Length: 267
Image (tube, rainbow, N blue to C red):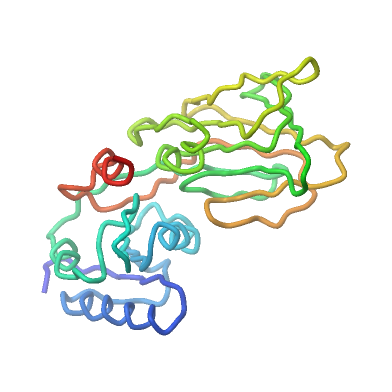
């Protein structure tokens, strides 16, 4: 048994195979003397079972708990950005959680406010796209400055870790998570005599606020994506995005720096 007591919440999808994996992880956790809880708000260690998608869901379902440490356990041999352990090598996982103290990495989180009312968070990205086969128009305001009128298929606002996903496929920059910044990337923007955008990904400092004002003349509503989850909101006037004071903590290991993960996934 370790000298430090921890309370653990285990997140996974609900099916027979995952139930089996969850029992395996639970046995290891209890073997080292930690308590498993069914209430995530009581946990200081939150374990997701699955890939990066499961990790993102675990963060969302546990309200992006800045006080907890998130640990991902994969069930396949695929390479992931957030997930560091594998269900077929739980001895490595056991050794890591038995450490007398934990060294952590912190990843920035995006705060999204819709209509100045509803607040959501993203670890990867916010995406805004048209719900029909038609371009979507938005006015883009940086802090209090009207910057441009966008017309295109959509916009992606990504965190540093999210910059390796959808944004990267649109030629966005990959951002070091040590930079507290976020990125705006265009999706198939229209540039002509009527519409003109910067036409390039833009990087914003942590104290910037990005406001997207919807075109009220349109007869359709945008599709809002928060990480890997769609948001069902129809009457959207504006969306504000900025870096949150929240962050997601993960274990710092000898081989899991951001650039080591980047190398494994892309090179």
